[in-house]
Amino acid sequence: MNNVLKFGFVILIIIGIIFTLFQFAFDKTDDVGFKVKVGWMTTWAEPGFLAEALKRTSIFSDNNVNGEMVSFLYGPPMVEAAIAGELNSLFVGAVPTINLMSNSDDWVIVARLLYFKEGLMAREGSGIKSIEDLKGKKLGVPYGTGLHPPVIRALKEAGLNPKTDLQLINLKPSDHATALQVKDVDAVAWAEPSITLFEMNQIAYLIKEFEDIGFVSVRKSYAEKYPEEIKRFIKSIKSANYYVAANKDLVFKWFSEDSNFDLNLVKNLKIIEPNFDVKRIEEVDLMINPFWVGEVQKKIDFMFEEGLISRRFNLTDRIDLRYLE
Image 1: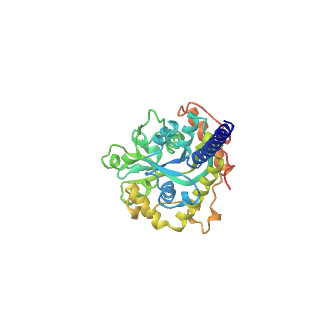
Image 2 (image 1 turned 45 degrees about the vertical axis):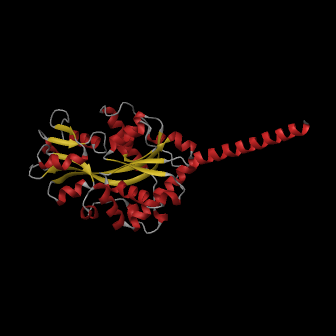
Image 3 (image 1 turned 135 degrees about the vertical axis):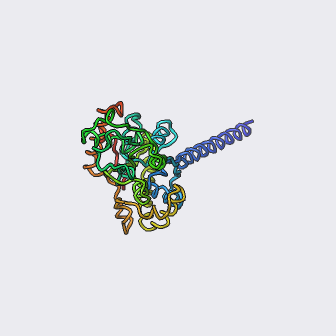
């Protein structure tokens, strides 16, 4: 009987050890298997280059990151998906980031995405030469995107009331070309590749140019739980920047295929991001300049005053650069 009991105890101990090892393995698998789901836009070229490099090469796996690039047409649907918990990272400009953070405290900026140009463009043949000439006209701008607040500010600075002196139309970037060609609108506002596309095809011309910044944001609770994963994720973004710099023709081809923009157009875009011209990966810089922190804070304040967001916040409280190495 004693031998039977001893044998039983041994079996229980073995079972306990196996269970413990299994539980440990399960926990580790859960940790490593956590997927970084990143939202990006097919209508916005520069972040699209990074997205193509990340999804079409081994950069994620090389850095031990379980990553997935999820495409959207433009910012607002991405923000909605992020709030709904369908994404845990975004490649977006300042304004969509502001919209997200004004709606949720569970998001933090971990790196600069890029610098880029945006433009306010008038329809060819419209006779519009300045912002003042937009009085009585129809202007298409995607609400909730990077150009929405700057356009309102520019209109006001030109002495125009955005609510009464012209008609602002919430128009998706993918509908801009058609709306201009059938004269449903007199002007539109968006970024590359639309600026170059409309100029090359004499659809519209630039009357006001803006420079802006994009951010890499992640879910704060995820970053706190998986800090090493975030570091590897940012390391992947650095590698993607270097890959774009070293393989522009290939990346342009990939983006052309996914966005349906002509390859010749993509090759002629007005790109101002310095990381796309680096010679060594060590030159890639994802830090956020204090100047831009101030500029984006002005946007936050302006958007709150204009009723574009329901809550004002301090941007510096939502930036965490500890994961940059």
